[in-house]
Length: 182
Image 1: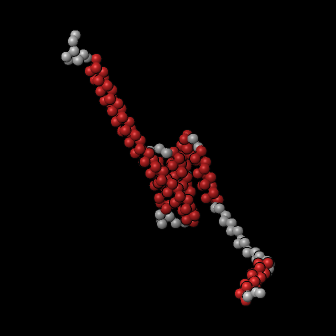
Image 2: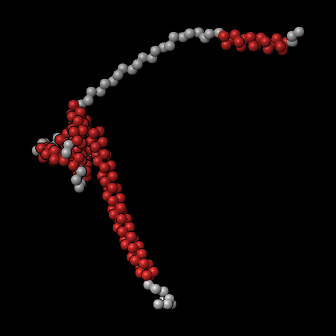
């Protein structure tokens, strides 16, 4: 005979098994509407400056100097100022990066108004930051090169002293001992 607890246990098991076997109601998934693609048209002037930067990076120094001379004749519009800075930065002579940053600084100031200056402000900021970072890297390289030269000079001096000590040691071993028979 079955006890009440065993009957209750079997009933619970039957309910649990029945719940597992039942299929959940099927729901059709709701498709979330995709947001419309936002296409931001590039400004032709900005696109041209980016292409110019790519071209400047590939130019040999003779072409860079020629382009710099041609650009010196152009007006001082913001896009020409940015081109001058790009050319100076590409030349990488002494102080060229600092001059390139100095050319860009007026375009970064709040006084630079106008549609062109506002449109080009992010590019100017990017270039100015990049030139500043390049200047810091060049200063670090110069500092490390100076330390390397100093270390090499010290190493050479120590090698000379070592050789002098070796020569003294050789000359001492060649001499006969003071109390030795002749």
